[in-house]
Length: 279
Ligand code: AMP
Image (tube, rainbow, N blue to C red):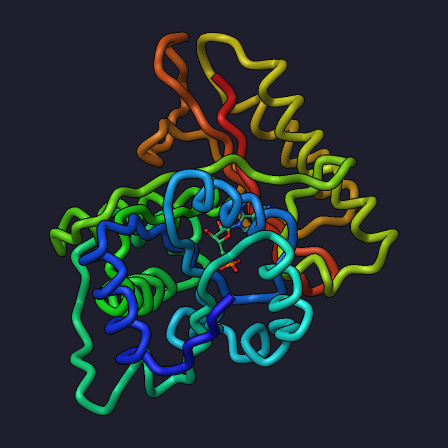
């Protein structure tokens, strides 16, 4: 694996590779890698000649300083894991490579996607996400971009970014990788004890219950039952919402359209998000 720290070196290298007809896949991350990230690397390696992974903890997407300061950093382990799993290139920039002094801050017109669900609890978050992904995609001219369904709203936002900025890349969304008890793997899980991780499996089983109880008509009872289950078990709930696949809230289901349930809860000061397509 080649490690690049300078954006200009990486761009030049990739330009040459692309001239030689190499297909490039890209997996952006914030590090503290786990099998969820690795599933994206493996998918990209299958479908491309070169896979680039970036590790950059992007300050502009954190609305909570404490969350930023506590974000886990495990670079040595990350490098080892990427090498073991056949990643070709690691981009490990510092902040000035992503946001150089001449960086022009844009405002991305994301509409509703920016203000619903996560947008309510993390104001400015998706502008920060777009800023970093826009910058990364201008450095890494990839044919294919790989994101995890775990961050469903982020996938929709980046889909919109690609559309509004006319970025020439194809977005692939891959399934969420889970612990044996159903807990979605996440870098933030490192801040939970084993007992807390075990307990957090309830997020998955609650979404599964919603899926199993789903029937045409009013959805408010299933939703409030799920909410009660989690709050009775000590989770602080930011939201449990059932929407269509474009994140428009669905209160009454016609039995036809596809639905997704999205959850954000806090347990022991750690905020966890998850989702499940339920039909
Ligand atoms: P992060 O490092 O948390 O910014 O995540 C980097 C990428 O990995 C994003 O596209 C995430 O959606 C994806 N990802 C994170 N956790 C998982 C998971 N458990 N399964 C699949 N993809 C994931």
